[in-house]
Length: 453
Image: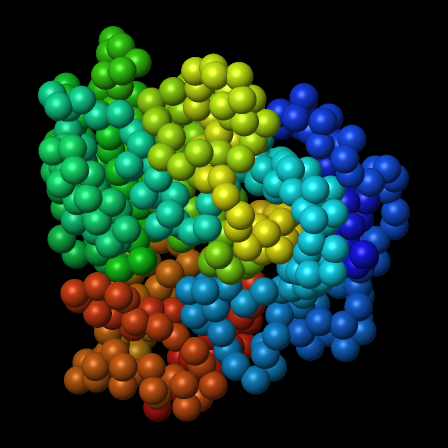
């Protein structure tokens, strides 16, 4: 069996058997290996990777962090967050899980499946400042939104409020739900000029659409169309006031597509104050491709009906014994079936990788470069910054236009200079870049110089 066995997983993630569904885990442990921990920390923290050439990983050194990613010497990866480039610890974990499943499929699956997913949920909860049972695992933001918005209970006399700025996945999930169940969905615009967006105006515009019949408020933390970051905490506080005196089934639930904030912002779900947070983990977190999470407050999960049966001990027990389903949780929300397990289980390494570096340092590094780029872009003739300059209203995404040049042409110019960028996938297109832990201040200068020329 490859190095990352059940024992090695425990050693790497510091996750003890127990955690979620203790009874089920105890039963699973009986069919697995002996649970004895071995020392695989060297595999997790040193060795070759990216441009590392054998140097030990030093999370306090940004060049060492960048060396964990491939191709950082040849390209400036300002679109790496669109679909994650795997850091070396994540890539190694994927390979080891894959080898285990290939070489001893049934034994590896039986010994690792439930415990590995428990480990991922526990590390995700630690990162979010939440509880493991509040976290569900999915394959993407779109899957998470579809399952959540397809399962939330909305009565015929209630409605859903979302915004004009949300991505296709939110809009289409509610369009499908509306076509199926005749749910009323309304949209509001939160700003006219994104560069001038401010907290007070955003909150006022959103709350103007909230009524006594609003059951769901579906928003996006950081807009991939403009780079505007919504003041989620301020929105949550305003909704809390609107919810005063309402029965649980009448509360307006705040649901957040958090994919462009997770892995950048140094906050917890308690800081945000929302009811649900949905995010892929294969973007700013640089987790395995095809992974995602859905977090919900313990009390809020009661408003969700399952769409796909879960593969977890409690659900199977209900099926075998003819029992009614128990209350919903993140664990029970996680879709059952067989998945790309090597990727899902390796998500633990992405959370550990960010934890080793430090959420605060990741946020500071991203903001340092984002400010450098925004200030530099604002000084260039013929360049219009779309994203707010204010750090309180923006995160890692930066959108801009170049006079007289279509976005694809600008991408071509940047590509010739060794800079990878992207275009907003909306009706109104902008050039879009995202500095992160993969990029450097020197590469920001390269991007600005390419545009200046």
